[in-house]
Length: 288
Image (cartoon, rainbow, N blue to C red; front, side, top):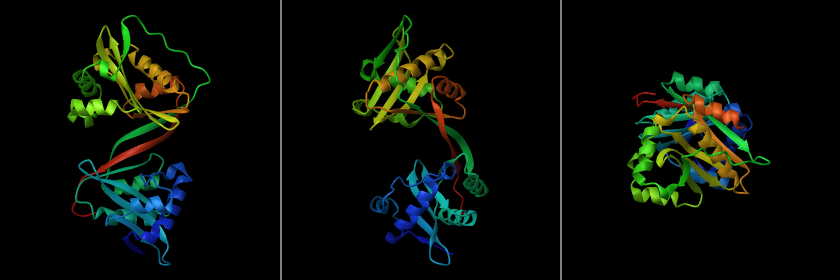
């Protein structure tokens, strides 16, 4: 058994491992997006991209580290046996001098066990949902005093306050400038709807469009206005707005494990659960 840096000639073998993973949802780990040798050769480069060869010289496992947040994001470990999976995971962690984040299917017990045995702690589980295009849809009733506003009809500060107060774990956009805000929501493939009650912004939903799919990237209601049906109204209008575009065939959404009300709403409005993904974090250690 040999663990070494990826070579250009390894792309075919790595693609075979990716095909093996794609064939069974329970094997899912965070992995390269590319599924052709040409595209993959651009993704699997650098000294932190490793493969494991068996005694016959065949590539049996792959793992890599990429810069992410305050540390690294783990690609893999992807191996066709438990021993190979654990061996390449130990090897790639020896290259990590910062925290390492990892993602895998909730059903991938082999990788979850390997991660936990090597010091990773579970952060959360995210459920991913989808809804096919309905045959017909009707615009939901909007109560008196309620109104939806587009991005630039509310101030940047109002948006930032909604974002800050709506979810404790959201932090990425707190450093945005007004210029960044305007640039982001001026994009043709991004749409923001802000729900206002008597002129006060109380919730928002953000849709992103890509080919024939729409994704509900963010949606939230201010804590002071929860439990009054505003979340359901926001979600209903998001569904309606997404499918107003005739080329959109699927709407996708997600919810973390602590968002039980969101999961119930998705299911009640016709979303189906596609998969669940575990997020892990391993703080930096000198030894893997």
